[in-house]
Image (cartoon, rainbow, N blue to C red; front, side, top):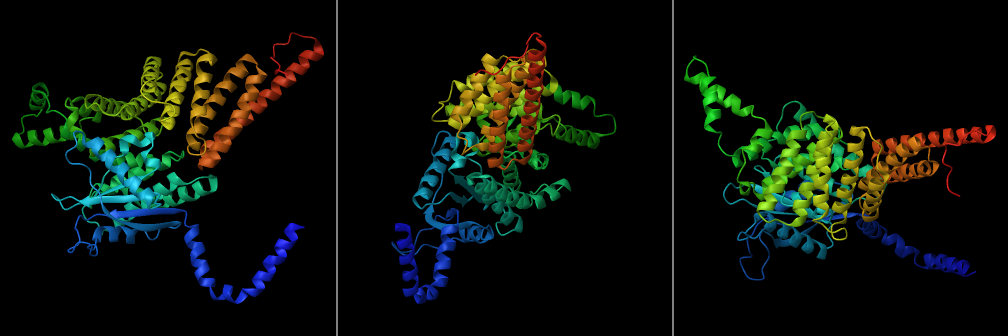
Length: 534
């Protein structure tokens, strides 16, 4: 009855105020549109210029205005301005830590303005280039700690490539912040459309270096965020476009070749003159493998904060390439890069999170490489690395990294057992997977949660089928169903199809064992099937 009178009251109110509603229709539509904007990003000042008069208006900031103009085409987003200039502390002992602290300060300032992400930076006084940084709540997660100092350098800020690179960054930030399968699929599609043009150019030989290194790094960053949803179709092009920068970083940080190498080059130069000798030396230098360049580095302090972030980005892409078996020969490079970053943070007494993340990714690269080469020893060593990483972090403070590391440890045990052709030790693996699931937040990290549940269900299916244990098979079927839902929330269609296939296999195995049990009961034969507990 109360609902009826409430409805009557609303009808009367609409009749009385109908004219006012019509008059303010446009204003209401604008307010609704503003409320529907799901993502607010802020743009800080890129110029340190102060007002000519104390308390007067701020000087115009051409770089901030340019970034704002380039990002207006991204739907479901709205820009606000923060009239504050930020820069990392130049007197800090460790520039990496200084950059990390600066990102956190910027993020806290943006939160006070209700911004989900913040673009900030400055013009390099030495080169005149524009240095752009991006920070958001997901990007300060322990999963991306090594990428916090990421700097996008643009020589010509008004170039169309720079505009497209900035759109990639915002689209990636939108994808990270999205929740639910439909919203994630929408942002995956938008990010993919931003990447397609650059991918075509990279495949045709374009290095995207005309207007600075920032375009290539922004492309690789967008690809990395896309691979976190299971889409690795752009991974090879991202590795390709980053490779020149990686070689330059490693070459600059490495020691000069030894005298023995120089003598070998001189001896093999031939007798056709000095010009050919110099040409062959340059060619040989260009053909040096990346893992050999890594081996030349003895002073890890030469790897600065920006280089660390780019190396971590490249190493992450190389790991995904290994997991997806997309590119051969990346195992040694990925392993070398993560070992390099681990030593860099150990020697500089870096944060335990940064060191643990590098060790976790090292273990990931070793498991993928060992699986491909069927090297059980390498996989076992990877398990030892995962245990080291787990001892450095807290499962509450660094929950995403802890869950990923625990998952990697369990996966290394499963992979080692598969290579050795022995049964998977349930007592070692299942509790680790379950601990990882307990720590990982499914809503915030649906793809990671789905990977863990899928791996657990696969173990249960394998052991359940070999032991004819219907309890394990029932748990596997339930696990594949939950993994399917999680992958759906993550927008990972391929992984969802794999989970659906696992569900069908466990269903078929259960059906076959149930039929076998019925036959055994009817014929009075030995019952080798373990019936589910009542």
